[in-house]
Amino acid sequence: MVRGRIDPPARYHEAPLPPDERLAEPETRYEVIDGERVYVVPANEPHGTAHFGLDYILRAHVAAGYIGASDMLTRTSPTKDMAPDASVYPEARDPVTGGRQLEELAFEVASTQSLKEAAARARDFTNRGVRRVFCLEVAKQRVFEWDSQLGDWRMLSLGASITDPCLIRPLSVRALLDAAEQDDEVARALLAKKNRVLATALRAHEKRGEKRGEKRGQKKGLDAGKRLGIDEGKRLGLIEAIETAAALLSVEVDEEKRTAIAQKTAGELNDLLAALWQQRRWP
Image 1: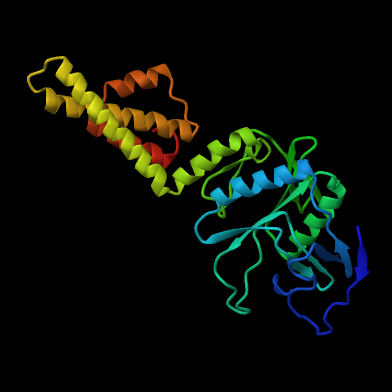
Image 2 (image 1 turned 90 degrees about the horizontal axis):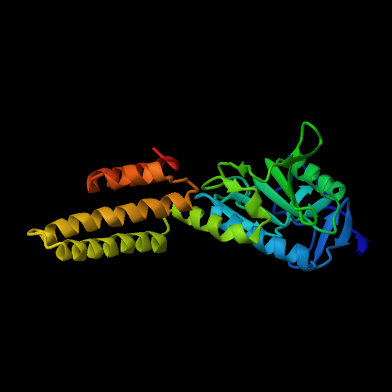
């Protein structure tokens, strides 16, 4: 770590400094902590991979009206200018400064950094006005949220989720650490955003179901095979879409539910699918 003294601007600020008013030199590996220029060491593999996964899952979960960023400097005081590993801030520009607004969520990845060091940064961010600060402790596979009232970290259960207006859906705590679960969580977030590619894929499932149903009706030699086959195909396609949606939303479909689904008409299945997406649970 390399340090060098930096004097803050001489002018007096009655209000908090804009978050994008720089004390550190942008696009370098330096932050400014307590007026000292501090070199930020590049990451080793554990920190680097955890940071990469955090960016991946967080980007998918950012709600409309917000923007995510990595390693973006924030001016927390006249003598401090530092960057969380990831952050989420409003898309709208500050009506007074015309610059960006302060982030609402900040994430720190602690690998070689101690929780005590991360706590000092969390305190600075929350004192500046950042609503929530989280820390991923890579070595021990733990996730914490800063509790300003306690003045300390509060450990989150791996089975819990982070719910916030900045996020399109609850963000799995376990997935912040587990690369194997990140793809599923990203897919669920994209479905919640009604991603066009995924919506097209689901419609394709329904069409394939219709074709299979038509063939099944013809094989049974039904007089109205084509008509009944298409109806049955719609049912099969909707059943497949319901099972796919349930899996992506982590909604369990047991044998009793499958039996009930199999007895429903295409119209009833369509209503069930719509309710499942809207309520994000079994209706």
